[in-house]
Amino acid sequence: MSRFVQQQDIGDPLVLGVVRREEPHAGPGQVRIRVRAAGLNPVDWKIAVYPELAGRFGVVAPTGFGNDYAGVVDEVGEGVDGYAVGDRVYGGARGRALADHVVVTVGEEILERTPAGVDDDVAAALPIAARTAAAAVSAAGVGDGDTVLVGGAAGGVGVFVVQLALSAGATVVATASPANHEFLRGLGANPLPYGSGLAERVRELAPGGIDAAIDLQGTETAEAALSIGVSPSRVATIAAGPNPPGGAIATGGGDAGPEALPRIASAIAEGALTVPIQQRYPLERLDEAVAVLRDGHVRGKLVVTL
Image (cartoon, rainbow, N blue to C red):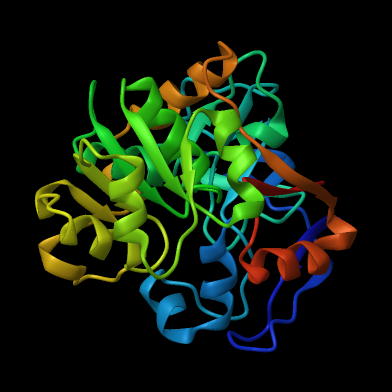
């Protein structure tokens, strides 16, 4: 038997249960992964609670929970080339990641090899957050010599955006609650509190101006950047919906390109990029992990171990 996190209905209160089911098996063109860790993302609980969002992602109850996983291939289906039993991998399986076993179709779902030196819990933190960050940095055109404003910088996507922008040669001005300022300084960013008066604080900290902005939470950062003269073509947003303010760019993880995840994973293996994990939870404490996730003040990532 195999454990599987199941949700009977989309909506609030969010009720998740761990059930035991017959082990799934890899069919033609598929591999089965014994999951060792699953990364949590804000979109996971939002899909589980909001029917409209669930429909947009093709999630229908009863369903599983989560997207990001890492583990070891333990079964290879007919016709699969390039993967063998024992390969360490990570990837995405919408609505199925929180389970002992995940079956994915090679070439149709996100599946990457885990580099030596990258732990499973770190790899499980990558798929959504790292791809979303890479897409936003690319959309904003962040490059050497730029000064970039990053809103919501201490969260799961923000920690990647900050480091990717720095590695591109940019100076990063980052908004977060004061409790996270020292943490962001440790990553190399120049922190500011969010909230009323943000544009004025940005002008004081960066008197030479801002070249680009990436808003990871609502629209406050995008609006502040536009008000101080940043071109809309260099303001990227991930949480403002399809019509961001002032002609800014709405971007998502799917815009990252196929090379983004392997490149970021390699940088982690080389020690050039870190993945801050706030807490690791065993599967038995999943409800606690989801409660922390929903609170919205996670520093870096939350990971569930299986």
